[in-house]
Image 1 (cartoon, rainbow, N blue to C red):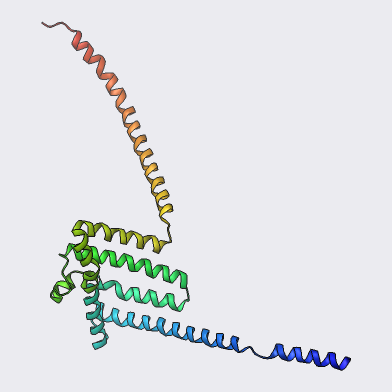
Image 2: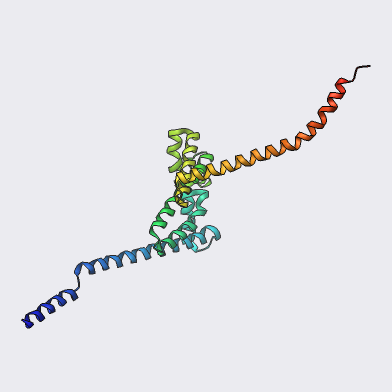
Length: 228
């Protein structure tokens, strides 16, 4: 009986110590995801640095010049925001801040697209087949892709309203602010400003009251004086 118990315990312990193939597969998949994340993060940082050198300083050789030309073709005058965005995105990827990183990337992207679209509209909304110089003075290919259909559907004024709304949504996402909280905050600030204006108007009326009281008797006395 003791022998049977010993063998049973040995069998159980051997089953416990035997590695689960599913856990090994999960570990390998996690390692592959971590490696891919590191490669993407480092790649974004490298492209951001080289693009910044080529765009801001005219350095980094042919690679920097090519990246600068690509950034200008993509976003025109707004190309200056691409290198910082790549650096921030690479840092967030390497820091594994997934939820925050995705929210911030989405918010900043909407803000940049909205602002680029607004500038593209004010620059005359050149189409994709416009000369490269005209696109670079506006918001590039991305500006044409974002603003062109909106101008065609809602005219210039309607496109401007929609692009401003896009910027506002991007700001809400970036700051993790809900529309309800923003409305409450704006209402509180407007109420405070209204109270301050009412108090200032009341103080002005109080300062003006003594002067009016001094002027009225003089005016009454002059009116009561008989003529000639």
